[in-house]
Image (tube, rainbow, N blue to C red; front, side, top):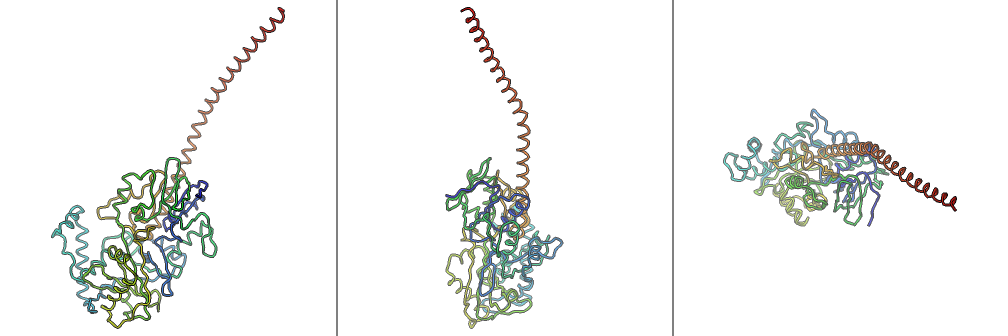
Length: 493
């Protein structure tokens, strides 16, 4: 069992929040930190993978919110590091909707169905929250008719399930702008984190060699008290610190991979359990040649099926990587979980069936497939957080709030930007700064306690010296009397 000297702060998780918080601490003089990461690399849900001779993003793939009145901090990092990106234009996706016979829906039909769906969504959002719960539970006629036809189901999926196409006023787009850029860089989205890490961790040839970062280290228990924290890992190692920052995903917190001793208070656990965890799966298919339409307005296309979310949203990678011959289909939530539970061969068979519906039976078979598994990944347990419609500021604050010496960070702690990469980045900044304030306050309390203790010590010492003097006086007096008697006796004799 390994046990190290106590450090100032342990950070659990090396995703964007954990690395950002560590950077804030290190830049402000708190350098005796320790980062414990369960997987074999930093990045968390920023994860690249080499597929079909290009680098694809298994997790977060876009920088969402660009071109607005405020500058997205993640976009700023991308510009500073020269990260290659590609503008994504979703505006024409609804005009590329295919039915099961391979026919595209007429533009007028697609446009009308889309506008009707948006109007219905806005009506739902404008309904009182309590009434909304009742309406959903009882199929209240005040709420517009639920989508039923394949095209209605497809558009409803795009509006509500596909991460980048929601209808409610999202702070990301209000603050930072409505443009979105796909990361298309061989170094991967995670390159931003490596550049940040270089500022406070020792690196060589792009590799982090600093012993303050420990990979493949799974935290299983966190003991916390007024005096500090003790972290125990799956392999039996024990690490001690004054504070700990827990930057794992909301899914991991809900899975109880990490046990807290003593247990977290009920206000904390209840808030964590109420937060929804979304699963977002991008399945990559490699082909010997492209058979799908390309050109302006053709990057995204939609498949309308009787089953909602069944291989609905497609994208070709020709804009990002010309000549790559790669298609991406996005699944979410229950469909994601279903696909994760079956073989890649079965998933390829299903995907090819959909593509043959759209483009004919003579298209080539895919030569390779890549299916990320975020839900079954015990170190992630999902893709991103999504606060339920009844969530309020108190719930978000409870998820974010520290418990004694245990601090929490991650995109799920960002009230305005949860679910986004910049939400995780800003959360890391906030947590790092909050912990710095706490460290400063603790030092001030210690200084004040010492200042108050000095007079008490002086008084205590004075009393001790006085007692010692009295004792010395008594001893000297006894000796004097003894000697005097002895002298008198000698004279008498």
